[in-house]
Length: 229
Ligand code: IPE
Ligand code: MG
Image (cartoon, rainbow, N blue to C red; front, side):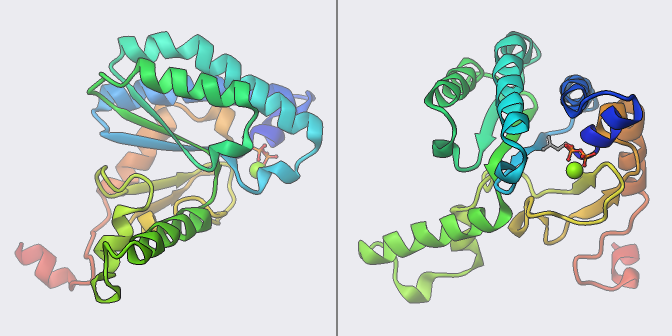
């Protein structure tokens, strides 16, 4: 979700207004994904590098996260959306950690869209964290070195219980991954949209899905093999 700051600037407003408008986009896109029957949606809300932003902006983002959780959790539940938050959450203020846990608990019974919010998340952190857990298993004698393979490591990465990431969308015109999901996007289709996140909605989402549906996914095979089915 990129482009909040630039959108605000275009409006002659402070960056914070962009983040607020961005929160409205989150609501619209979550709703649209639910209606379209998307199984899982993972949103990059705050990266492990975003701490480098001005202190005030970081604080305002935290505040926004808090209020959005309070305000939205009821409608998430009503819409059968199951919330998860991925990332190194221990770095957040205790008050926010409690709020996150409470919101997750509220939606545990939901069986519809999996909504994953990545907060203080980094793709490299995710892989390093999985490696650490594998090492622990080896240390405890529960796993031998020979048993370590992609599947074993995968099991310890975030979202491993969910379907593979089919589509990766970045808004705001930059063409880079910026340490979002790394391990998980090995075979994802990528769509880079020029739309700034506060202006991203159902239409832009459908456009991205449309692009996705026109791609031939070969997973290493030849085009001929895919066509033969
Ligand atoms: C949203 O957009 C990203 C976060 C919520 C951290 P930006 O704040 O990065 O917007 P730009 O790139 O300055 O336009
Ligand atoms: Mg940005």
